[in-house]
Image: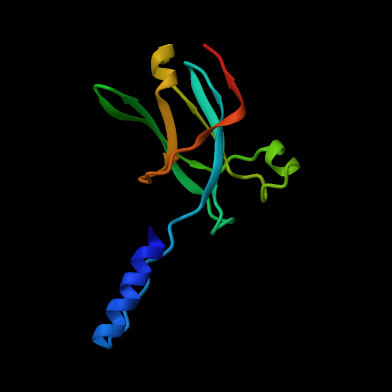
Length: 131
């Protein structure tokens, strides 16, 4: 999509003689939800274009009746696992506790995203799910 927009901007700039700035690149996020239960969700996330930055995140409950933010935080916890698999300095983890606990249906409807972003973290291939 950005490619098409940039090409249109270039064409318009050639027609008018005025340069038109390119749209900024969309952030490139990396991370997973590693654990989820009716009591918590945990995982990690980082911005590949700013590896020293720490991302604010939101835990969101998406049900047919509406969307509700359950928790906000910053993904800046240290993880030995991230260091072992060579993910930067390992300080990209998060853990959010639900009080009161969720139902299993609500647990399965939770998503985690960088704050205000459309991007949502995928479930890890070896996701640990518990009641």
